[in-house]
Length: 335
Image (tube, rainbow, N blue to C red; front, side, top):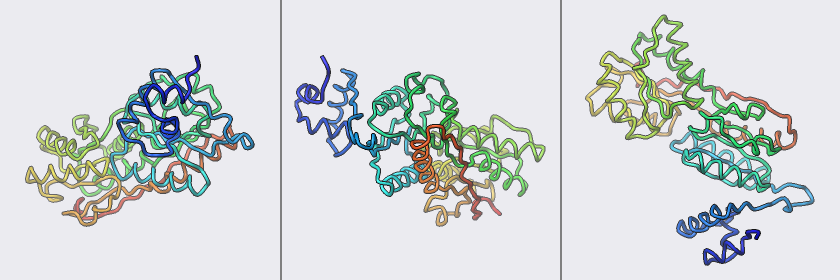
């Protein structure tokens, strides 16, 4: 027996309209009702088919955006930019946060694959980026997909837009090396993902140019949070007391790192120089003002949506775009 919205509504004890709102993302539903409906949808493997929608244009005028998390201003910045650009171009945007859950990401892609959307902007979850387990059904489909920020080999024929992460890591390390630092610690958010790998590779290249050996012990995971980085910097400096400078790979972790250094009574930049990542609004007024790699989330988001429109109109389109960064020098690096 074919599962319908009506059957799901009857099983949950809600109206068909409420189920429709959950499926289409057209209205905010209470968390309790939403979870009940999604549980039944998963139970029956219900996948709505929107292929009959907008038959005249064969378009739903809806795009999907799937991100693994939004822990900082960088991610929320490009999400907002994509949303604005979608609206400008007459599209609705179906936004889903997978919270780094690989199984949920697969379910979401399967759902959107059923002609619910004209195309998807995807930032793969960390575990998915490290694996090759995207479904063949999805990879063999004609659904336009654009990757943003994080890369996955399975989508090598899809457009991809990212900040120039290698250059960011290189520029930060070179700046510190030019000012005499040789023992430079690095606090990262998530291991294994392309932004982290590329930023570390840029950092390593700068060290190589200055004849400084790369030390694996100078890397510490900060878990993309204030608290995680606060603990990370304490652990890193307790194990490596010779470190005189730090490069921190997100805005929240920069705040946590500063907090941790102050708890250790470490003076910035006199004892430890610091460069952060993502020029967050409070950076210029912190004590001390923070030197940062400045990103362009607005440009990143708008470019991602424009790439998706090109992919929708031209299935063979596979352009890669690297958005440039620049270093904003303030007092935290001691320069």
